Length: 267
Length: 116
Image (cartoon, rainbow over all chains, first blue to last red; front, side, top):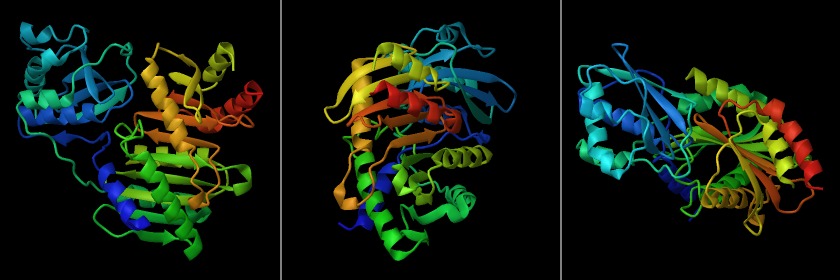
């Protein structure tokens, strides 16, 4: 298999991962709203309090970690029945709570049609024994079919990063899961070296043997700092189905990370 | 690397939830310091991450990486090879807004001293 084919194969695997979107998302009915919330929970790797704000100003929060729903958090939404309010008492959720959690998520979306999500650092982090509830179990209880990954594009963000790095970029490649590899810039030798390195690296990072393969969120940037005498650093940046791979002049990879953070926040 | 040195290193990285010192060649956790007591499996997984990230494939012709940072919207994972310490490395889980330009030089300097 050529380096290009291997890259495309790992991209398809990467496309099963996702991002936290901060724009308002609309939903057609309470089940659709619950599904949106579960999608966000399923993308949260580090412990975070996800605060959902609805179009009528109501707020609802939960603690998510390791792509699992650990517990619901205050405030308790108004007009919830006592049987559902009991879930928001700070105790951790278990597999037995899937149906109740589904009913709670449906109830908070009732009469509402859009939400935004804001991740915060939780006041109390989950303990090592808190395993929580898999979003898939709640989806089944809603009931909803298993989610299928999409191939959302993030080409504009990656092009903005390339523009921001400007002449410091020695070589760059962009890839989409359903398109050919595109050489953005760089001489033949530099592009060939970069392509080979990317294939080797992504093979390792996205293989099932790599502990973070399922938890690395692919709307992010991975920067490799090289030894000083190399005078460059390399990056893999992207989102579902779309990647930018580049070799950048200089050792200031903190500036590259800052550029990514700034652009991703603006997006 | 003493437990105190590891705690000092973690303090240099604001928002660092966990710091683990590993020998990635033998995939051995040499020490850890964190906000919480993490299960050993979690520490072992970070160690394997370092082993994967710092694995060198001579076919690529690329210089070995001195460090790797993965930054996403929900967190940052930092992997730093200890200078002149063979296959030892520091692995950290940090907040997504960590100021690496300010923090990493100091951590690297401390790491060089601690691994001597």
